[in-house]
Image (cartoon, rainbow, N blue to C red; front, side):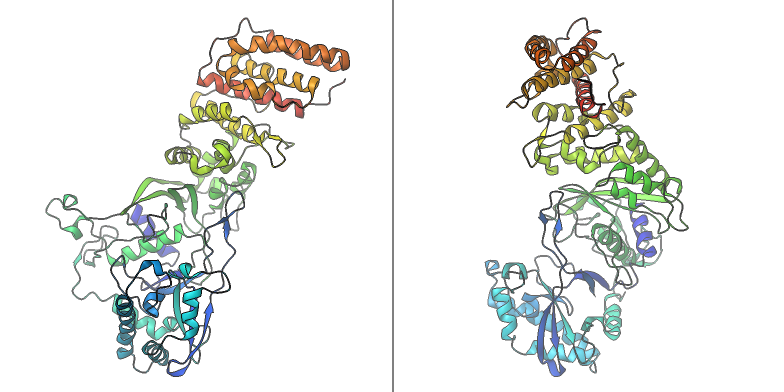
Length: 601
């Protein structure tokens, strides 16, 4: 089912228009004149580097992708590509000396690259671009190129970064804006070469059902599955690389028979989904269809071209209210997503050495997806700091609030996946949500802003998630803002701690360590051991208010008495669920001090 859905995507978006070519970034263009005369080396323009949630550069910026001859399954064995390759093959020079490749190895690699060009030239003897490339490869490497590979370039690239750079050729008398490999005559020749079925095994394709299809020996190996440090060369979703995988008398091809046509489509579809800006048939980048879940998991998603699914990735970075508006807006002739019955697919992938792991495959409709996300929007709605209206938090802010310093990589991958699926599939939230929030509140209730002041927004995000957890997992409706009529003891105890902290702040102003800084964790877990002492100590603060701000003293003392009025005693301990209620009560009461009407002093 996964492969069939990927094949449909590739055919729908025209990703298999030329199965002999694939999109890859090309770093440099070698411009040649007649008879292979060297003219110049031009570096492809690079986009500004991507940035993470904190604004820091993320990864090395790459040039835009363009269609080049499809790569071979090159691993550690030397194997030259056709017309477009790395410096060690095109020039016989390795810009990274630590690779310690011998001169003989480098000469052999350049010879293999030259032979592939000569093979095409023998079949196309009148092609002037091929002739120019062949003559260039038979000569000495120009000093300008040798200097570039040994010293890097003034723009930004160092020699070590040039080791993976891709070089292509341009024949200027033909067309200075078109590469040699883009020529239609060469494309036809290379397509016939790679798609020849002579001597290849045939059988029924597992994906298309075609009865007499040419079967592939090596299955799709998309690149970009995290963590890319160990999946750099690409990892397949299916492999038959052990004898134990072969059963019922089937050989390795029979264990997973996939046709070459379907295999190319699947690989192109996965590459398109994993890329941030995959070029479409017209060269324009297709919209991104990936969401990073964790450092070793990525979610890719797709739907028919007529469906509007941009709202899906927006839940990770945009305010839920904005996402709700996107889900209710029709685009042209297409229905609003929340009413769209189109099919929707999502795939969560992780990489291990040798293969890709399918964590989850989701098949639903755009309508059901939108309604589940809208349900999440209602569940996390809460009064927010610095905002005039209640609302929710984007998933990225919620995840940041659950870990020290907002470092998403510290969250367990399984937790990230379960949380995301709960939001988009309407499933119960992971049980670890409650424990994670309570533990984070005890460790770091507030996070300091750039000026060193306590920032309440991470606490608000955690409480919004707690509110959603109680609603979906326990069927308990929690209020958006302070509800003085709620009688749950943990909720009232949280309100009490926030009020005692406010009394201290009113009486003493800024202090090095507040009541909350010192006692939140113990008060939420063992209230009987902490809160009576804090109430006694607060009497001195109330006395100070009585002398200096009598009106405010009346307001604060009345509030303390109102909270204590329904409490007969303090519980010795609170379990995890009660500690979650304590946190919500504390946050609601604290936020009410900042959002309520001005008090009459």
